[in-house]
Length: 247
Ligand code: SF4
Image (cartoon, rainbow, N blue to C red; front, side, top):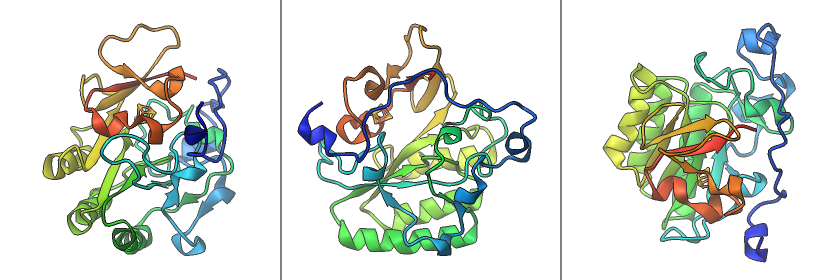
């Protein structure tokens, strides 16, 4: 790892170790659709900032390090896992959030949406050349109104560029609205992939540790070819689907 790459993120690499927490289906958090860390869920007015620097995430990184967006800051948004997600999510029981006790999850709803628009207005002022927001470290698009908030933000703040993943079905209302973000603003500004979908483009999937990959690109951070999203940039440069090996 280069010095430049290692300074992108606060924490070192953690290799998949094959023992992430998997909830039993009868676990109260699985049945109730909540995080297993309820004390780490905060109302928007309990936090100074909702959009946090990617520096705090070992998988994301602080600043884009390659390509035409080099130098743009990366921010992340973390919602409550399961509470904002579709029940159909294939990772419902093995959600990565089960292993992220320290993460600050933000309660979703109108207060979140209002605060996000205020913060993005400030980021537009501070970074007029461009900034990235990773949706969502945990959680998902939870309503058509919430997707409409992102549509409004993309319209009002030309420096805003989002990337990330959703477990929403692109044939259902929320998923359709998410797909429209890329249709309306272009993949360059709204690179949201549909998790678990079989498409060769604009999707992502988790595959078995030894499975061959023919119709997607394996996330280079998992192979050690790059350090984190900031040094990779594939998710927003390419529309090809991304595969992740199961941990
Ligand atoms: S492919 Fe690159 S940008 Fe996408 S998740 Fe992996 S490291 Fe991040």
